[in-house]
Image (cartoon, rainbow, N blue to C red; front, side):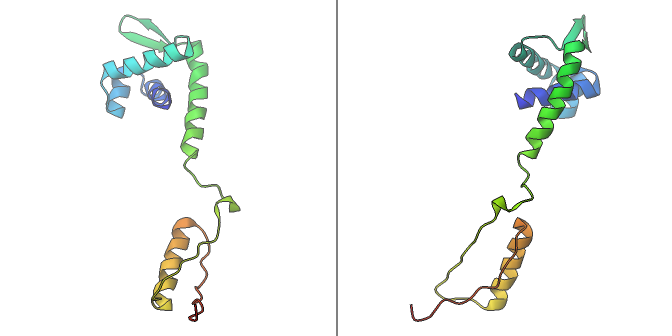
Length: 128
């Protein structure tokens, strides 16, 4: 359904099924099929079709605003929230610890990537 909504938005932005298809790498026929599938799923037509042209109707205008909102929310699903819910403690142990400098550099790089803080490691007790 997201793909069909994105195609619908592209048709509205570019004016024709052919132009939308060119923009997203589909044929006019494939775009038309996606729009038809979306209309069947929704239960109403989004365009008034006359001959070879299609004009966005009132239902299509309402759907466009909602489709843009849905696609925007969908895009945000992959973003990490800016809070502590994704934070935790990572303990790393090795049998033969490399140098402190080596670990410190790696932990700092990980901290940058995963937006967390890195603490210097402490060697475990050698007595087991």
